[in-house]
Amino acid sequence: MISAYTGTQVREAEQPLLAAGLGDVLMQRAAHGLANAVITELRARGHRLYGSRVVVLAGKGNNGGDGLYAGAFLAARGMRTTAVLTGGAAHPAALAAFRRAGGRAEKLDGAAQDGLAAEAARADVVIDAILGTGATGGLRGDAAGLVEAVSRDLAGADRGGFVVACDLPSGVNADTGEAAEPVLRADLTVTFGAAKAGLLADPGADYAGRVAVVPIGIEEHLPGPALRRLEPTDLGRILPHPARRAHKYSRGVLGIVAGSTQYPGAAVLACRGALAAGVGMVRYLGPPAVADLVRQACPEVVCSDGTVADNRVQAWLVGSGMGPGDHEQLARAADAIASGLPVVADAGALPALPSRLDPHVVLTPHAGELAALLTRLEGRDDARFGDRDAVEAATLDAARKAATLTGATVLLKGPATLVAAPEGTVFSQADGTPWLATAGSGDVLAGVIGALLAQAGPGVWLSRSLGISGGGHWTVLAALGASLHGLAGTAASDARSGGPVTAGAIADAIPQTWGKVSMLSNSGASKRNSHSQPLR
Ligand SMILES: NC(=O)C1=CN([C@@H]2O[C@H](COP(=O)(O)OP(=O)(O)OC[C@H]3O[C@@H](n4cnc5c(N)ncnc54)[C@H](O)[C@@H]3O)[C@@H](O)[C@H]2O)[C@@H](O)CC1
Ligand SMILES: Nc1ncnc2c1ncn2[C@@H]1O[C@H](COP(=O)(O)OP(=O)(O)O)[C@@H](O)[C@H]1O
Ligand SMILES: [K+]
Image (cartoon, rainbow, N blue to C red; front, side, top):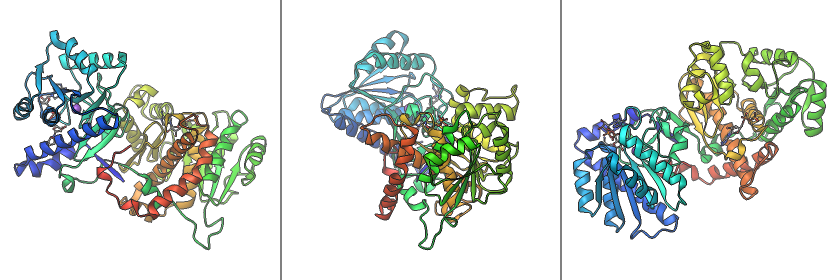
């Protein structure tokens, strides 16, 4: 499992080492890790190290110091290295080391901006070391102008080069992932000590690109993480496996209230997702015409047009493919939510939720649906998250806020899917591919999570094995579902040489993905130290 922290948590973890006079050692470790990551990336892209052009954008704080020391390492390896000092001053010792190693330093001013931006855009590597965890707000003045110009020139260039962010892309909030633009989009972020939460939540995750963690010796001083991410080896350890004497009822029955005459396909896709994710049985409740379609597509499903009370299940999935006019289905959804059993509430069930819920209810909105939910809960005048754009600009805060206001577990779908519990546990899963943004993909996801709720129920052993207690249990199951769905979508696309996938293909890829991750953990690979691994 990957653990991520706020900027404050990381800075506090550095304190004992700084107090022991090890500040320069920490900086050297960070800079060395950054330089090595640049070298690895250059080699992977087929560049010769000697003579490669490196431009370091260096701010006046310690982040700039890391960048300048890394520049010194690279200059010493024979690279042509220029530093653009964006804040007037620079970390004195790091600048001296940079110059000693043969680096050229230029002060940024308005007149030099365009020339320096063009030089950066032509370089093989641009290192963004303007702001780190000590930033308040985004780039301003000349530094902002430089980043705008570099971004524009890079967009126009036939690029062989790449951008590496030092600790985090300058302007991204380490705690929340919010981005104060302009931000230079990185191909790779090399972050120090531990992953920052803001690198794993959009839009920060989008600006960060791939994330690699360089250990610098603060790890033992870190508190509990602000955010977590399951890795495939974790999935293998916690996915349920049937006992030898299992029968279909002991393995878990999922009740599905989904689909309508307008959107019958959602019911089919939710059933396919659930069946693929190992549930003992699926019971479908809905209009006879939709039930006919479900029977044809999935003869395994037991269909009826009865009531929630008539059907014995271990968990419910409600809402996929339902609209505000589907009164009978909405009444079933309300009964399921009131049943006290674990529930996934998706799509059409979201606008009809009671105002107070419990963590065993997992809401699965996309950004637009979450904006509507938060607007309803907060009142239109107070709503900070009034539309999809506002949610996408601050996904972590939006998901947390919805969990706090509803009392439910909230899964916000997106490139990095976030799962937030009211008690504070948050997961971020980014196992998918943009091909997952296809109609019906969310219905399959809802089915998968429903199946996991039905199988694992309140079996808290599962969360305890990850060091998570109480209400955080439901976030584990939801994150597990999001990860499985993302990995399956990626596998389905890979099987098509990276081409498009349909929602049905995602469901079809789930059993094999399940099998593969189970084998990973059986082979003992889970013992690997994830801190030194690239995050994605
Ligand atoms: N504390 C340590 O010893 C270590 C720190 N490290 C690095 O240090 C960074 C944090 O360093 P700092 O605390 O010096 O902070 P930063 O380097 O992130 O930036 C702070 C400096 O920029 C100025 N500033 C803040 N916001 C600004 C804005 N919006 N526009 C322009 N200037 C702004 C501040 O006045 C200050 O001079 C980390 O991100 C990491 O890269 C690493 O070297 C590891 C060890
Ligand atoms: N750009 C993206 N990259 C990766 N996954 C994505 C991206 N956009 C959406 N997804 C995933 O695709 C699914 C889409 O669900 P949803 O929006 O509910 O679609 P639908 O309502 O059509 O079923 C979610 O699992 C979401 O996390
Ligand atoms: K930076």
